[in-house]
Amino acid sequence: GIPMEIIVGKMFKLEIWETLLSSMRAGEVAEFWCDTIHTGMYALVSRGMRRIAEGRDPLEGQKHRCGMGNMFDYHSTGYDDLDELQRTPQPLIFIMELFRVEEPSAYKRDTWAMSKEEKLAAVPVLHSEGNRLVLRKEFGQAAAKYQEAVICLRNLQAKEKPWEDGWLKLESLVTPLVLNYCQCQLELGEYYEVLEHMTELLQKHNDNAKAYFKRAKAHAAVWNEREAREDFLRVAHLDPSM
Image (cartoon, rainbow, N blue to C red):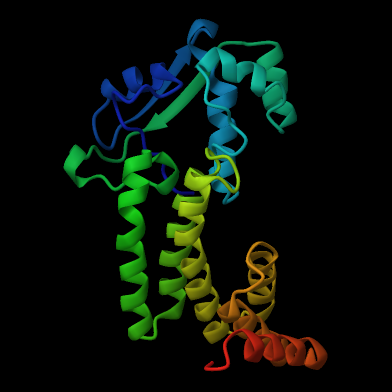
């Protein structure tokens, strides 16, 4: 799997890991026995790590509270073994291997670990990188850039009240990114993914001609003739220039 990354000094839930890793040299493997006083938050940390491995947002569903408050929110982690560990905490043995240590300036954080300001700053950069890759016809890589930008914005939207000003401002940034992402998926032949995303977008923005156009092309590609014709007619009504 992909090695875990820890930013030292950023109040990681399992603080003992920072202490243990700080005692190690790069390339070293060590085993540590930790009493229950140090392992109370392990179930939550493990839950987040498993979500990352599954390709999900580790903060999904998390409310903005202190660590103890989150213990109540996570009365069930979604994993039976971790639920049992929360009910009956016990000492744990950690086997750790330290691959490398990086200077702060050399570290590129994952999207979910960024602050609000970092996410907002990353979006136009990712958008621009995606556009550059499209010009080079590297559609798979471009789609990944657009998707990462959308994830940044969706994470921020989750903290806003739907359809209020803050949410709408973020949504206005999401829409062109989703359209660009789906254009890449059309080029890659991922027609059903385009149908799913464009249908979801049109449920919120039913006057978006570009979304109807991309969905029409996806319908046509999978021989949904009636649906394709209906969407092309909507495009002609909304934007005859397309």
